[in-house]
Image (tube, rainbow, N blue to C red; front, side, top):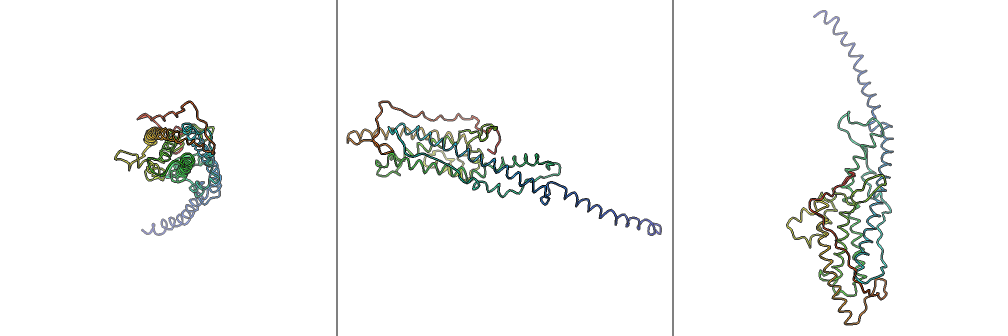
Length: 323
């Protein structure tokens, strides 16, 4: 005990006095040099650069989706209006996103990626950006499902109602009635647009494979604003007892909207035929949307009914961009 007290304990105390501060100094220096330390200048440089890349990428993404939606609405409107002897149309749909940043709050407020272990931490900026893009793929659907996609649908709905008023506003005493030709026209066109929204593929970037215009996960989550809005359009025509789980998937939504489009197409064409007979008897000309007397064509041009998706057919995204 005397030897331990005289020789060993002082030596241990001296070693502890030397090595413990060195150990903490080493740990501190490692933290400063760790690129994933949020307080380092290197991490902030990576974060700022990567955020700019992601925002630029998503700005192009939003712009392309808006452009595709504009084309779909105009094409489907023209396709349907060919049934009604209206050779001209003075309304054109244009969905332009002048300020994409309003849909990118989740990126503007992004503070970087989180890693669960040291081994999974990126050691280079390239690895950091790759992990950030993977994170973005998982966040795109829930964010756009609550912001961008509902805005796209609502803007088309306003356009459809305006077009219906121009076409048939002078013929309906109660245009909001389900039996009115205006309402039948609105449902026919709107169901066609929703079908297209659920089935159309787009190339967001030239180097990317085509992806779904509407993200699959935006409708899988029945609490998203997109899912709630699609359910709202289905509520008066959905005959099954599982409306609370609608749409659930793009395929299920596409099949329902296709069936309803074809059903209302038959109704609106029948109503228009009766309207033409009535106008002919009263010698009242059909007026085109531009205010001119329409030219009556000898041929009957009917839109091709929308195809009904085959049950079990895959409608999955092929490049994994958050759908």
